[in-house]
Amino acid sequence: MTVAAEGIAAGLRGAELGQRLEELLGRDKVLWRPEELLLYEYDGAVDTARPDAVVLPSRTEDVAAVARFCSRHGVPIVPRGAGTGLSGGAIPVFGGVVLSFARMARILEIDVPGLRAVVQPGLINLHLSTAVAPYGLYFVPDPSSQKACTLGGNVAENSGGPHTLAYGVTTNHVTGLEVVLSDGTVVRLGGKALEGEGYDLVGAFVGSEGTLGIVTEITVKLTPLPEDKRTIMAAFPTMDQASETVSAIIGAGIVPAAIEMMDALAVEAVEAAVHAGYPLDAGGILLVEVDGVRDGLDEQRDRILEIVRAHGASTLRVARTALEREQLWAGRKGAFAAMGRLAPDYYVQDGVIPRTRLPAILRHVKDVGERYGLRIANVFHAGDGNLHPLVLFDSSDGEAELERVKEAGREILEACVDAGGSLTGEHGVGMEKNCYMTMQFAGSDLAAMRRVKQAWDPLGLANPGKVFPTPGRCKEYDLRRARA
Image (cartoon, rainbow, N blue to C red; front, top):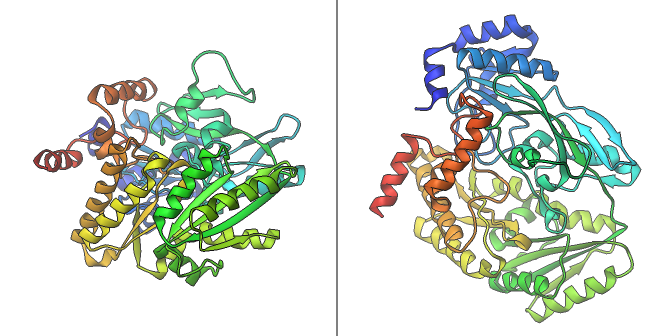
């Protein structure tokens, strides 16, 4: 049991904790009654745990006051954005206080000449790009949950998206942070400058999943909107052909803004839900987009068309208008939600592999599904080898069914790591993959990471139970692995 778990077991919890927080912040900022907490016991993953209280801060001072209170009483503190995370990052494993940033969702500054914006962590990702579009600017990272996910969550998980292949993920677009440490100390890291002196503490914090502290303000880079775009949908008889095409495009020296892939099962769901115009008889679909200065885009498009034809594309569509482009992308952006057409629930993994290993690993994913008797749909960022296999199931079938689904996911992740890849590309480790960290990292690696966390969070109260293997829960996994 961690320090945080021991603290909450021995300290404040339940109604007493909620009432004390009400005295600190006022009744309008605190939830603690059982029916009020139901919404906060889950995120977009499959595990659940209920907090003892929820605080809805409206300013940094509220966050600092809660952190100081929790530090004094040994209470875990878990930040939460929109709850769209896919690794259990916002789940309060050991109870304690969830900080929901729904009321800290403002754009504080738009600096057009400096290509910067300063925002609060609860701001919806898409709202920033919408706000700066009149200035010819946008925020590049565009997760599929862009219409709902928050910038604070994006920072916590180092989120990516379809259009980060050429431009980089969240860490490449954040230059400054205001952070509240778990003892209530408020610190500023970085600023508007692209580079600073000394350690890159912003880089260390982005992707730390709330385990180092709580973000209360974010300074991000804004990027000029591309002058034009060319979008291609290519359908192939097999996923092998689609996968080989991805490597061929990159190998030809072309780095598109996006290369996305879907298999036949994903297309079946998407077409039923969105009617994006994908052919239902395709084994695999590629969406390829190039953008930038208008001059030269037609040449890039034509080179891509040559490559996809050479690799056996059976259907080609080139978007001629913005509306056609939006329709093609609506299918990809709505793919996860469309899975409800096929099953009540899905369990998504987030492994990363070298692009050249796509055909072999996708065949392995198919084999895993057949061995476990599960349907697995594939929708993913093919350009950077970031897989998103969606294991379809019905949670009403019981805990045994969920464990079977998780075992299938574990096999897929093991194959990704064995192929020279990693456990996660953008969804984070959270509580979903923390037991698997030993697949990728040696004990000395994890010990070095723990020392970083201890320097920022010596009491272990910042989002405990995430990223690092936890005693008890992960011991069972280690024993199964040893037997295997």
